Image 1 (cartoon, helix red, strand yellow):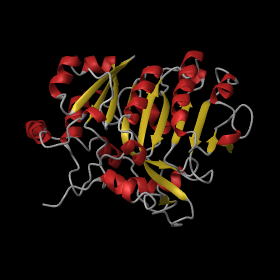
Image 2: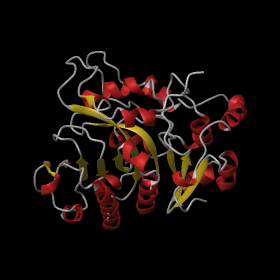
Image 3: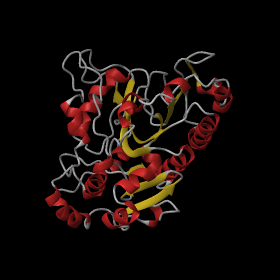
Length: 359
């Protein structure tokens, strides 16, 4: 029997090779810059980014992230800043809290801290927040704001509780609607369209890979979650909709799943580390199938197009492909029992990989 592919081990042993050149699979071909890098990505959806209280919470989140990432951060990008350039070296940037105070209620909250050598390059340390302008946030059809952070796989391997700690703490501070965290690609912040094809291609081989630009997709995520992942946050209303804590604890046994309460809901951790769910090995691990089936009722009913349009036939996840991606961990109800049996042979939680404060 072939040994299961260890995504984490591969990245640790091949870190330099895991930096993906820009423009792969596009008509113009490989470009001389880092277009994408694998990372552990946490994405959280929340409201009221135009208010002082939530902006203060955003700053607290960044300060906690910055304490870990400061030596790695290189550039700050801002969209439509009220003053100053839209790009500057991180070392020249004022503290986020100072810049945030200069924003009015109807100004866009937009900060992307990157770690690429050049400003247009991707790096595995990244912190992005995009908050709705006040006038837009008050409209009934407004999607949520987003906060996304990235940690390198090697760092998470060496600090096995770090990702969970940030994810749950940020969820708590922001009172998030929902969120997800696991394996993904950090794409170039300003050349995302050119690097979507490699993300689309890999998503067909790595089912555990998160895809798409969070803020672009946010309008479709007001009513439900985008995906289950290593970490999945759901709000209290969603908890009740799927049958409450008793059902969650019954369907997701504590040997494999950890539950962390936060100010507005619950975070579910599936297994000791993020799973790649490789198509060539096991694209539907029980660790993801069981929470996916439990949370289907609170999944967004539609996602639209995950990627931008294809200009030259390059891979993109759009239309039917996007709907298929949403449903990639779905299985027939009659197969659930076999997945519960399959869970017995999947990785169990350990003391080192579980954050304190689990239920």
